[in-house]
Length: 114
Length: 114
Image 1 (spheres, one colour):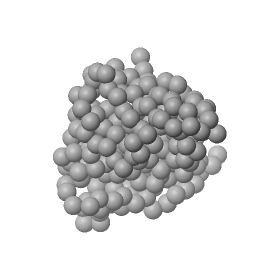
Image 2 (spheres, helix red, strand yellow):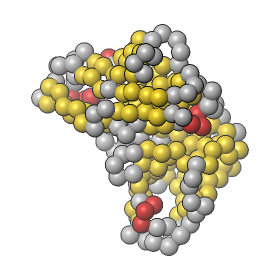
Image 3 (cartoon, chains in turn red, brown):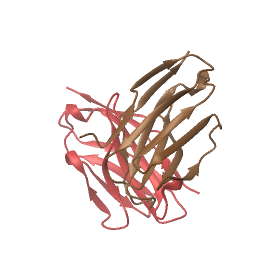
Image 4 (cartoon, chains in turn blue, cyan):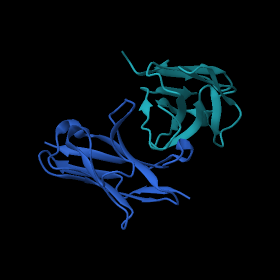
């Protein structure tokens, strides 16, 4: 069985400060893990993915995430928040072999204070 | 050029009506999906097609019927619309069915049933 938990429904940070969005997962298989971003009234866009290669994954717009098997976590970070980062972020898990069991987290809304 | 496009962007209709949403991808991908996003932003996979064949059919009412005339198109037809069908519907595509492939999402169709 698979599951994914995003630990915060809403995160608010000041512009220029670090961002941390937390994601824990559970998977019976070797998982693939993704972070997607959804800006208001838009579709989802891939930020980064982990597929059993390097555990520290770099994505677009300065985001990165670290796969920690011992902690079953895949937290998303960015050193310095920008106003344009305000959006909904989804952590996603699939078994590496098939997209048929794709599970989306419930989402974290990131707000940026000027 | 838009990679994954959907029409219409907005759809307002009355209960009991039948409606269709169209999706096209120009990425040359083999696999396409339909997702439903509810008012709380929760995303759930509805259908997946690989090379025009249905692969996944989650527990979706049979009022929803996907149709794939070719690899580049996956349409969603909904019969006898109900209030609970109001949501944003996203089409997506990926290179193949493997869980390691990222998905490319369309802009969404906001369906409102009155």
